[in-house]
Structures are given as structure tokens and as C-alpha cells.
Length: 341
Image 1: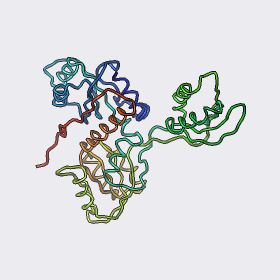
Image 2: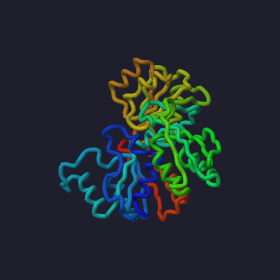
Image 3: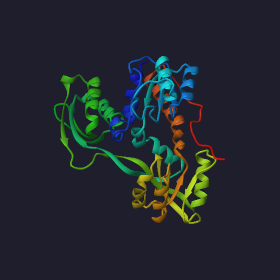
């Protein structure tokens, strides 16, 4: 199969429109039309990960963090970072990074973290891309209506509104504007284009708000300190940083944002968070958090390595659904640069 088949399927799950401005998400190195047989899933693309890919015979690396956050001014191989680029190119490895689009996707990074923390009644934290909705009215042959409705509701994410008979069968669905083109193409695979028709009507309300981060409640109240200890177990880490003036206070409402989310602490407060779980908290920001009365658990950026088993399982599911000829392997390396001593 081609690398682009995996890329296109992934971008249905986490579209590039979800990424934040200036974030280098997407294809990083290589040719998306290259044939691939084995994918290595990783959090970071580091020299040791590239060596792992080469030893495994992987021809694609699928990462959460971009390998190229900044453009390279030169390719001086005395620089380990530039030498890594050379090794990737020399072994014809395609590198794709799913960064803030995966952070914002429904069922993506922050949902995985919220599930790991056993949060209930979970909602979004930081508003991002908003997808507008439209009303699609279609007229299709009666004997094809069930197949078309099944496709629209199960594959295209449409919500069936109503139907009526009129020289064929007419029905209406609410669907995201972004999904219309793909939905029409899908219907054309079921019904020849000259045998059906549709109209679109904008909806004043509706649509879908994508968000980065999640907020929810614990099943039972617990102290800040006990929750922090639980985070150590949940994320398999030896230590973390706790920012709190009341470590023995009972809490239940928790916000989480994978990666460097300290700048969003005011948003967490506005939504009633008593504890905010995020990484790379800046010293002066921590003082502001304390002054605002918010407790913060900083388990490090590396907790996003939860993406390795999750993406691996997702790709294997798609492998079965699409009859791909593809082996998917999760990196066995730990790329956390910090050691607690």
C-alpha cells in the first residue's frame, strides 16, 4: 500500500484543519506516494528511534511530535539532528507527524488521557476549530434509500432528520459542511450520479466544536496529593511536579491537556477545574496558578506516549477494515529526556 492511504485515512480521523496555526503537522519527510510495508509508531522522532526503525525495516515513522519544528538552515551532518535527517532520507523512510490535530480530534490524544484518568462526564476544554453544519436534502431511488441512509449516518456522520416519498424517496439529514464533498462522492459509489439529486441549506445553529484538552469529574472525591500519587501510577512515572497550596484538600473536577498546556490554566479555572493536569509548567506561571487557587499536577510532556498503543491499535483496526497489507509496530523506546533521581 502507499503511505498516502494511511495518511488520508488518518486525516479523516484527525483532519489537518484541526491543527493550530503555525504548527508543523503533517508529512515531514519523504514521499506520500511511496509504497510502505511496516510503520513504526512513536511519540518523538529521535536518532535512537530512527535506528530502531532501520533495524525493524520500517519504511514509515508515524509520530505525534514533529521531527522538524523549525526549518533546517543547512544539512551539516556534524549536527546530530541533521545527521538524523540524512539517515531518514538514506533509508527512504516516510515521516508523518500528527500533532495538534491529534490533540484536538474527537477520540484522540486528550480523550485518551481523560480515559486514563478515569474522568466522567467529559467535555472539551479549549475551543478550537468549529465545523459548520448544513441540511442536505436528497432524492434517491426507493430501492437504494436504505443503503444511502446507512452510509450517511454510519460513515459520513450525518443525523437523519426526516423522509418522504416524492418520485423516488426524499429525506433530509444534518451533516457537517466539511463532510459534504466526501458524502456526495460516497453516494455516487452507491447510486449513479444521474439517478439522484440533492440540495443544501445552511443551518444557523448546530455544527461541531472541536476542542483541545478535556475536563470531567472523578468518580469519588480525593485529596490533591492522593490524586497526584494516582497520576504517577496511571502514567507509569517515578516522579512529577505538584503545584498546590492545599495538597490535602478534597477535589473532584479535573482538567487535562497533554503537552505544554500551562497557558490555558485560566480556561480550566473558568470551567470549574480544581486540579489541572498538564506538562512543562513554567515557573512564573506556576506562581500565577497558586495565586489563583488552582492545584496543578505536572507529570511531564512524555505522558503523551499514550499515543503509541492507542495509534497502534487504531491502525491495526483500519488494517482489517481496509484489507491493508501493513505491519504496525509501537516503538519500544522511552524518549523522555528527564530522569527523576
